[in-house]
Amino acid sequence: TETIGGWCLVDGLVHCATASNSILLPLIKEHGPPRFYLDHIKKIASRSDDDASASGSNNTDDLRSFRSLCQIVSGQQLAGNAAKTIWRRLLKVVDATEEDSTNLTPDRILSIVENGDTESDLRAPAGLSNAKCNCIIAIAMSFKEGTLSDNILLGGEAADDEVRSRLLSIKGLGPWSVDMFLLFQCHKSDVLPIGDLAFRNGTSNLWGVKGKAKGGGLCQRKDEQLMRDLHGPFAPYRSLSSYYMYKCSGMK
Image (cartoon, rainbow, N blue to C red; front, top):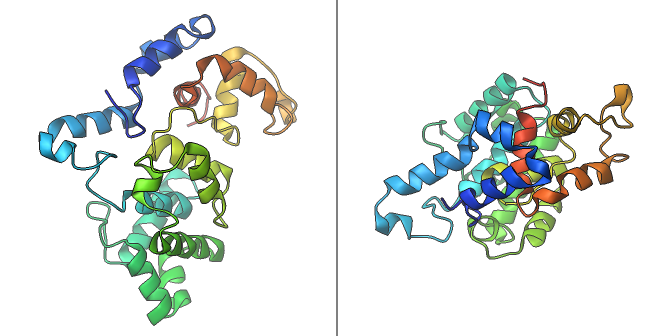
């Protein structure tokens, strides 16, 4: 039951089910463990022992994190279907698909920039804004230079704070994008995505608290300490408490 982040899902669920007067227990019973953790665990279990021990991140794709970051950036500030459309368009630019995205590599992106026209060969056909296009290029450059890699982001070569710092140093990767990446892709155990509206709404609904945002919602800045206090008992597994906020956020 080990996640990509190296912590035990069962330990995390037991802790969160009993912390803070078991306020999360009904949600855990209703919705079960997060699907993205279970999918990873099942994938590892289905591999041979040799494949499962091939890398510290339990993943044979050494550019998995690069593709995940590109997908997050391409879908920033877009609803679900629109985000999927832009992601497919970006994959098509490099002759890749959702089923086989291996052609989406730092070298492929940088080759377009160096040998073609960034506007007509990358940004426009992918449907990216200038900011998103520049961010993806910067991510590709970081992977090529070795500032980022799967070993750094997923394999434990760098501490969590260092990983966050490296990601935030890239223009276009803000706190929300980094939190989503660390939570859903890196399986870090203690992510608290205060900048996420669904997380804030779920926190407000579950605890029945009002904040200083319009309409009594929780404000990212003014109510930050309140949210940290409410989720504090779930550390070092606040990624789990954060996940269950999506289940009671009232948002689709």
